[in-house]
Image (cartoon, rainbow, N blue to C red; front, side, top):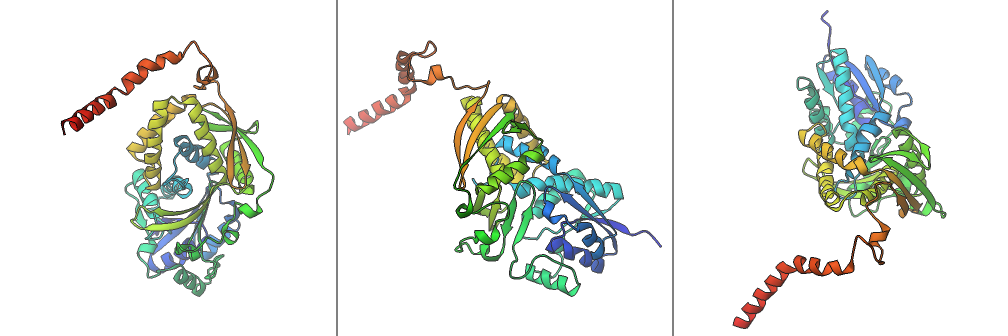
Length: 406
């Protein structure tokens, strides 16, 4: 018998990927190799190997890339101050290019012709995953069951699983679609789909306390950055995974970083999601403060515009694009001076600036204070104001002349 062609399935053990294995068996004559890429969803990893094999996979890879995810992807976004539409810290979008990279690596190792994924036909992730795969290997063929099968809802998917004795953790009563990694947890579906509904945070939140249950006593955190990268928390040197883990615990306890956003998806529709990003929210807040201290005005202002475009590129799945590479080069050059320590006070969902210091500080108290300075004489402002306001003086003269002529 000829050896079957192989397909590498992006496998999470959730609803969608759990039913994809039997669906592939019923519709394709392929050897199914599951690949679970662990980017910090530790609670979902228990029993995943056994579940994949029991569902019909011939083999499963479990790749723990959590630290790589933080240091190569999350930290790049922190340096950029990338926030999509003012609220979303790109927790799902940042994980997708790394997941795609590992899928391609496993496909090459196994000699697989196909990669399959469980992204829905309405979501952004199908674009992110497939664009990244194409950028890394344009010859791999992609199978996207949600764009092929007759299942049209999560309720249908649950019925499909029940008929095939596939064990699930979701129910029709608690039918939220969740994505979990070390940076965030996203919640979609259920009562959130109607924007008139207040989010049931007591029911939803998994990383973060509600404000009502957060402690009544504030807590301070001190984060040290070197060239835009967080390296120490409260004086303790930590790698990326350790840093984000600890900040998630601290921020989650104080209700930090919960965003309720009706966002504009890449595929043309609006969708509502609740995002919990406690540690990432603290990091980006601290980083922004330090940039205010260490970046010159024009660089800081231009970088603010870059941050919007950077977030859009990541959101739209363009991690491996030439433009993002170019923006990374600019951003990394700006981070050469972003070294120092920032202190924040956390209290019931808020972070209060509590001081910072840097050897690269561009703020000089002797210049900026109201007192005298050899670098700044109050009288110098006379000539500056005359030159700065000259265009407006000319406009006013023309306006007065026109008024008199009337």
